[in-house]
Amino acid sequence: MLEGLERMVGAEVREVAKLAGLPESTPEDAVIHQALAWLAYVVGQNDFRHESIERGVLEWLATRWGIEFKDSTYNDDIERDLRLEMSRRAVVSLSPVWRTACALLAAERSRVSEEKMDMLMRAASLAIPSVSVVAEKRREWEELMVVWGDIDPRPELEGDCQTLAARPELAAHALDLGLVVAMVDGRLSPSEENLARDLGTSMGVGEDMVRARAAELNQIFWSHQNRRAAETPNAKNLPLKAAWDTLESSGCLAALVSAVGKDLGQAEGGGDAGSVVHLLHYSIVKQHLRLVEASERAEAELERLKAERTRAEKPKVDTPAPPPPPPDTAATAFKPLVELDMVKNKPGERRSIKLD
Image (cartoon, rainbow, N blue to C red; front, side, top):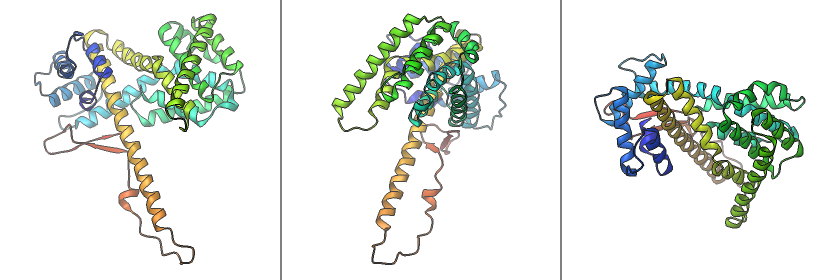
């Protein structure tokens, strides 16, 4: 939690100020400190050192959610249990959104690609701070799209549409997600557009609004693609990047993250307690994303070094190949684990946060 808060910048800091109820005039460099002081006040933590506030907030929510811990339990272990529970609850909140997106993609099953699934998974990871939970959802989505590619999915989506109809702001972004991911290969098919209009009607969005929104998203998509093409003419995967830019600039991604935080907060009765949970989810999600990105960079660098070593050790054609070198245990023993020095569990101990 604390790692996520202390590394926030720009719009993230402004979102923290909003969730903590701080005045808009609060200087950006004072927001995190004041937000932590507010957290301490709400959870009844009298020690205002940042590490102590973090501990107090984690214990407060763990107690409310029935997660067991001891005085000797590391912050990381409590936070991990909270993070996994948040992820499970987030799945419930956003399940109708993802099922809608899967249905739109399944409308043209021959055009469903790894790139589209990767984008759907990447969008989910913004709200679900668990690599394993997101991977499990991806497997479910792939199975759904196989089934829905052969049948009309609308009867199975009636409950999802009713849920989204009660939350019009989320319904609109559910359609946005499906429509934009479908655009990754450059266009929407007639069957995708028709299904989007039918689902939109069932959600209370309205056929005309869906048609107008699809046209607007298409315009945004192509503006991003043209901009990127002008900036980097030889860049690869321009449609993928343009689609992601579209999801970001349309507000879709931020809305999905916010929806989960609101649901978690409302489940705690709203008010200050709800705002604490919402802020805790936001900070843990941001922290998790940074660690995942660091892990991916480390893996990419590891693969690059392995490839370089392989090229350097490649024998000449006219020379017998030498025996293979012993395994590089430092390289092969990589695990998605990021060590952090910023926050300590106990004096003299480094903090390690896993990505499961």
